[in-house]
Image (cartoon, rainbow, N blue to C red; front, side):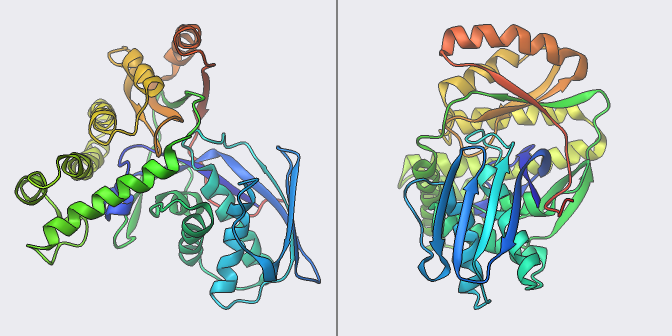
Length: 364
């Protein structure tokens, strides 16, 4: 079983606000080999970490250490919660999705586990049902109140296409994304997300507070998707400046994504790149989920003739920047950055050139 990580071209932290996102599955994935057992024992192996974990179906519960089993256990637990019969199973996990890089390695594992169990148990769940179950696994076992984007992109990805996803209705459309001479370059800060889970949940709470403040006057408002900046000026800014700042970023980002889709339809990658820079600035100064290393990488490529656009990607506080780069510029750019990054940040700079690939699938 193979389930990919994902990139997101634009639309960051909009998914849990009923907004739009523009993700794609990539050619780095989690791989799971699984077999059913005749008892209720669950035996998990993380081959890359040389670690294992065992429990029983009757004892399914989140674990503190090590953390990686939670993505698999949480996915299995969703079958029990839906009243579907779950047997014990053996599973071996391997992944080339870098952990902590903002590429949704956790969603890849959840979707791979979900899809494998669905096949072996013959429960005939459709892909959208499994997306929702994988999302609940992240909420309940990993403790991160993520939106739907990561699991949706991993499960539903299509080769050489972005997914324009409406996170409220889950209506989606595939947008061809074949870049003539332009590649997707991911620059990994190698900074781990030590604050990401708690800060992610705090940002989500701030967005919910903004909606609550507006709903007192306009009960039809359900999420920041329904809000424009004049409403923030009137009902949020006078009450809580920080909540206003956080929610204003989201309102602006939803509009940026719609502009980005228009740019893609026109084939205007330079306009798309400029919007990516705007997104990074908002994530850094307004949503405050960037970090020194991410900001440094974006500033180093801003204005570079071979780079069309760049921004931090993912939950924040580390991970990767996503860059649209002319193919011939990638080698010289990485070479120019890596020693300076190591010298100034005290960390190695690693990079990946990502291709857009298909979603969760069975492989021979």
